[in-house]
Image (cartoon, rainbow over the protein chains, first blue to last red):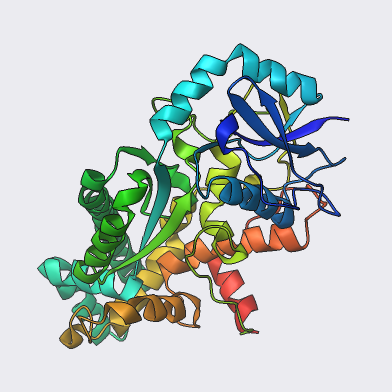
Length: 250
Length: 141
């Protein structure tokens, strides 16, 4: 029977809530494997495990429960070991590394911030900043919308201006929150956000971080800012920049 | 347009926040090379670069149209200083029928994911990407 691994934590933190439900249908019971000072939170691996919503949530929920009052190194979704022995073997082999990571991340959680533009508001901004764009838009309006080429020209210029704002706003979001974080990890750019940044924040600075987010929202009504957290420190389990997406399991 | 459940930012533990933290659960976190990973076939669609959508003729035309409609007298925000409402305005703005180029693009991906998980839970074929305008039309029906 292969073993699904949720995360690695200190043995002293490995008290699980009772009947914690893991991945699988019906959900498989979550258990703990210990080795030295370390513990792995695992369950049996269901056959034909797929990245369904329900399974992703189960993985996320187990980590949220275990990480609620202690540090856990979250595994990437879908990590399966051949058996329990292989898991404890890895814990023994890399004990020093995992203990160092657990110490480094102790008392810290991840907050992920994603930003998009509120379209109408950002259009107002780029128009307000550019007499040229305003003139073009006005000319088109008076011509009943303008020809296809005129509309294309205006649209392309507006798109370029919006794109420039995206970069500017992304930098601003990061700069505003960075001072409150112990570490920063910029997420992949390609998922539809102008900014997608994870911050490693000490639990006792969480309120400060939330209030900085509020200020950022007030100052930037043209940004839709989404805050997710506290999360297990997915983006900070390894020192240095996190591995880019899509490099594992291929 | 059918009712779309509001997406809330939350602790990440609830289902509502899942989409927002999806790439963290799937692409970050500890990897141990002695372990295998389940195949993620079927959700590569998440990695589509929506910026490509933004730089399309379709988008240029919609930007131009949006600028024609824009009431420049009104200022960037008619009611500034109401941060509590920002979320709501954005929510309805992004999901209403006046969906704009940017939010439309994001929604294409969001919709694609939803589609992938609803229809393709056990399927694994890549899905052809629909243009935003096609999606808008479908959603209004």
